[in-house]
Structure formats: C-alpha cells, structure tokens
Amino acid sequence: MNPIILFLFFSLFITTLSLQTEPATNNAQIIVMGLVYCDVCTTNSFSRHSYFLPGAEVQIDCNFRAYVPKTKEQVSFSVNRTTDKHGVYMVEIPSVDGIECAEADIASTCQASLVGSSSASCNIPGYSSTTDEMAIKSRHPNLCIYSLAAMNFRPSKRNARLCGK
Image (cartoon, rainbow, N blue to C red; front, top):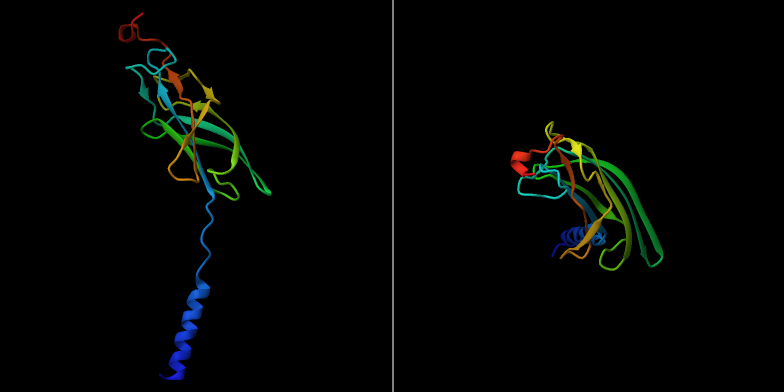
C-alpha cells in the first residue's frame, strides 16, 4: 500500500479520535410545576364546576441547595410563568453542575404566587400562594420534579343556582 495513502488514513483516524468529546456528565434537570384553576363554587377546592385556568400568570421563587462530596451547589431564581391551556405552569432548569438527583441530598424551597388571571369572570385570588411541594421520583435518575400545590382564582360572586347554598 502506498505510504502516503497509509499516512493520510492514519492521520484521519487519529484526528477522528481526538475530535470525540468526553461523555456528558449526568447533571440534574430540575422541573418545578403546579396548576391554577377557577373555583367556581368558592370552596377553595376543585369541584365538578371548577375548571383549569389557561393564561394565568404565576411568580415562582426557588432556592435549591445540594450537598455532594467536595461541592456545595446553590441555585436561586425568581421567574414569572403563564399557565398553558391545561392550567399548568412549569419552569425547567436544564442542568445543574455537581447535582445528581439520585445521589445528592437536595434541600429546596419553592413558592409560587398568583400574579394575575386571564379571565375577567374568575379573577379574585383564592389560594394565592403555595409553599407545599411534593418531590416526584422519576424513572430517570437525574430528573427532579417538584410539584407545588394548586392555586385558584374565583368569581366575585358565588353562583348559588349552580353551586347550591
């Protein structure tokens, strides 16, 4: 075989190997989510007349601290989100260096507060803020899901005909 062709082939092979990147680290993805509904019967609970409220604006304030060997990570943020057509708001933090959900001891605090309603007929805050959260275990080892308690708006007047006394 021609030595020049062999040299070019070998050079190409070495270059290809050197271009390979190291495998991505398994950093945590954190998702904070909750929902907003219209409490038509003003009972501060979801009844058969209640409905999920799209377009409601929510402020989310979180502080995550993780303690992993040789590292202390802290992520704090405050964002506004608008609920989707199902009344769900969500914030995703794509990657946090040094935090592995499956192995880290994560201490977190999150609070969501109602900012505004998209509905003129359902715009009085009921449960207007929440700090209750539930961590949901995912099948993916580095996915942390924090679900906040539901918040609600209600109409200015209760519909006695629809909801009873």
